[in-house]
Length: 356
Image (tube, rainbow, N blue to C red; front, top):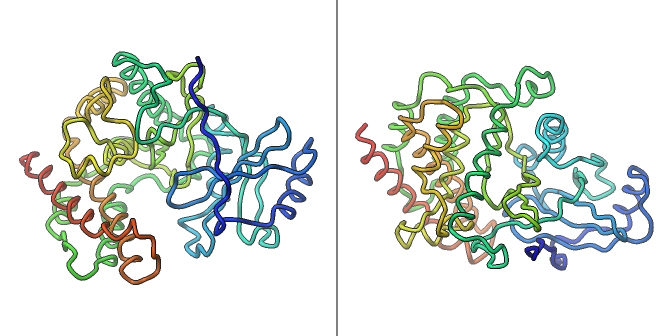
């Protein structure tokens, strides 16, 4: 029995757009589209918006920034399409881009359209209809890591790949950049976290392990599973932050979201993917498996793990600052200030455990 395919929902009123204009643009740029499309919106994602357009049996996915987005660097749809186009010949899990649009008269913003990869997207809980026992879950987990290893093995000498980022000096830029973002996001009562930032600055490796294509948001809810064979990953989504950098930083960022079964109740409340399910590797096992598959030294992974947690802390604090300033009224953000403080303490506990 196949597992349930991820399905869209009705479009939220605040995220609606002029379907007639978009339909006209798509028919001009994509062959074979007939009739009026059905429109739905995929759930999930706190940043860019994702829609399904169905023309009979043909399904397209449209990605656009949220209404009112001003920070182009944070919502650069055309760059994301460029990344996927560059990766596609080397990495078949990157969806195929069908059209890009920079004409604001069509949608009011840049957007792109890609092929739909119909499949299962893992959310907070593991769907029972996947039919996976602990051994199956472990195989799913190792396959997920294997796809990351394959990404990190892409030859960066290809000019289209080499153009995706600066590469060397990535770690230093990340430590300095995210530290500055945190200082700018502080609100009354925030944890200053200067000790954590000082530790990251002092303990950062002097050079990158390697310069690789890194996804920068690699999570279980950003991969697509074959509904007939959930151990097979058919696609990887959300390439917005992809660049060239240190592969261990990519893994550290992924593990910041990796809540395992024995974590404390507060961290359990952060979980948005089924990394607690019986059979899932622990964070330490993920790191060890990755090291075995790549041959890279992961003995000093404490830095990368702390940085991943700190980066998540900054993101949470930035969202809370918007809430505190009245720039967003979403009630779920009210607790983000406390969540950022918790992550600061989690960074400190990991630092203490490292003995460095």
